[in-house]
Image 1 (cartoon, one colour):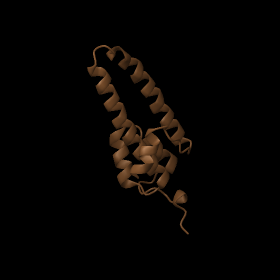
Image 2 (spheres, rainbow, N blue to C red):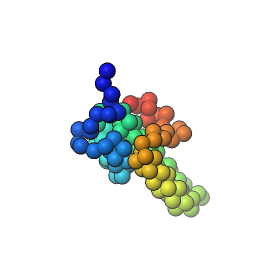
Image 3 (cartoon, rainbow, N blue to C red):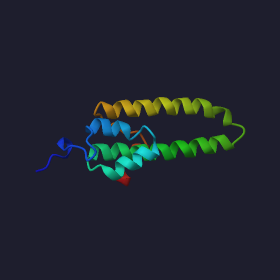
Image 4 (cartoon, rainbow, N blue to C red):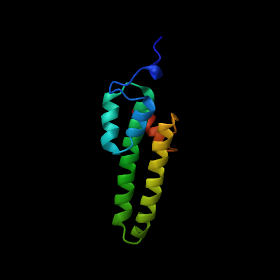
Length: 110
C-alpha cells in the first residue's frame, strides 16, 4: 500500500508548503499545483484556491456593478484578504480546512 501523504512532492516541497503556496497567487498557483501535484492534500488546497478565486472575482464584480451597494466592496475585500490569510495558514499547518460552501465544490471538482 502506498502512503500518498508521505510521498515527496514532484517539485521538492513539503506537502504543507505546496498547499500553502497554492493560495499565494490565487487561481494562477492553484492551477499550477493542481496540474503538478499528485498528493490529495495539496490537490484539495489547489482546487479550493481556484474555487475561492473565482467566487471572489464574481462577488466583487457583481457588487461593484450595483451602485446602491458598491460601498460594501472595500469591506468585503478586507474580509476576503483575512480569509485568504487564514487559508494559507491552515494549509501551512497541515490542516485540510474546508470553506463552508466552496470547499464542497472543490471536493466535487476533484
